[in-house]
Length: 302
Image (tube, rainbow, N blue to C red; front, side, top):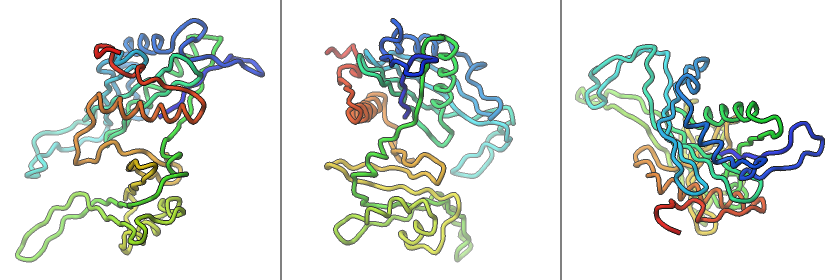
């Protein structure tokens, strides 16, 4: 999630602009028209060998733009295998990118000084970050009067301050093993889960220490953890429960898990509803307002 603000260029005490009124133009219209004109020669990141493309741009609701994106990495050839049998069914060449779907949304209130850009992330990457970076570059060339400033924001940081930590889960990639009678066991992801016995919550200071592998290992009662482990935490605040993935040092501090790997991805309506809640909370923290009608599909009526 990123926050977008706008102010005068080259001014010592610059005036701010509402995203809905950028010197007479609406950010929603500017962004939608720019995104619809993108092609893969614009979005493909050759330096990072990342393939990003825009499949569709939709005005989902009066003040929400929805992007349907594709993302994948290339440059490493390999076999395409059937995971149920392990048998190769094809090959991936170094110029081919297995891709996944990401969605991104731009929320622009009718009034106020902040817009928000939210994007999904999956095991194949995140296409939204590339799109936002390209738009920021485009906007800087589009006008010599207004500067757009983007800053990452995470709802998780607000939860860190007020929520109770009720569960810690550490996921590692298991290794196949040969066991008795010649049986080979293939292991995928292994989860270690810890829940506090007393009062149902962990000490508040634990959350800030879980990026250390030694602490996470001790909490879930294992001797040690591999470098590529992932830590997830479940927190409760004001009667609501949410699950977040913790980043390592230098990574985003907390990212919310929208669905686990064994669950279906949220459909479009569920995703917009979830993101509307986040935008509403973030704007409320800064004195802004999000009217739920702004993110309600117009065909459903007022």
